[in-house]
Length: 294
Image (cartoon, rainbow, N blue to C red; front, top):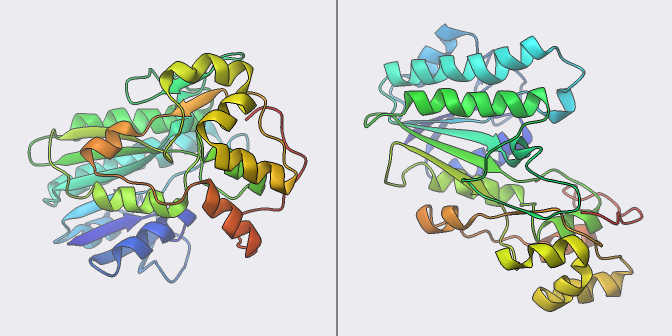
């Protein structure tokens, strides 16, 4: 397949490029130079995009403004980049005869669906309640893409969980309920390129959780006891390293639909975080005093 990958110089884009490039032709598009990018330019450059999309089979669209840009960049620019550029790209792709459009979204858009003092079980049926301009524009982009989906233009939306480098104790705990390795994110995008079914499909992409939906009460009140029950290896590893288990857990992202319909099988859980820390990988940060709430 020929795949147009936007945001190919970014962290997510680079990981997806690595997963794709040994089996597909990848045209990386970004305004920042990097070895994974072959076409330099802005997503508003229709001429550049038309050239990239010629004879393409699929688009993977990761380019966006993100949470760190909130309060630094005007809301209007968020809409221009995250919504209008997505809509324009989808229109050009459909016009060029591209058959599939995979969009990198975020679980952050659930926002206020997470309530203080409770543990929310979040999946594709949960109503998003965005808090910031970042959340709102990602949700608006999803809705715009849903309008494009048709029997000749498949759209797949991947709401990816937390995957950026953080202190290793936090990352290890997050892998139980709200985090994911960037390589698993890339593999999910690869799977979304050709799965069958309805023209528009959406998936939560998060690491496998040991918790059950009926655990929500205990997670909100006494997470350490439940972790010792459901994930004793995690509890033992935390004790061995002198880390504190989180006292409460406020959300669980459920990727069951992606496992069923995409064949998604995340490979890198909490143990990989420990291994990355021990080999001083740049994917983890040094530990700091543990938070009481994760």
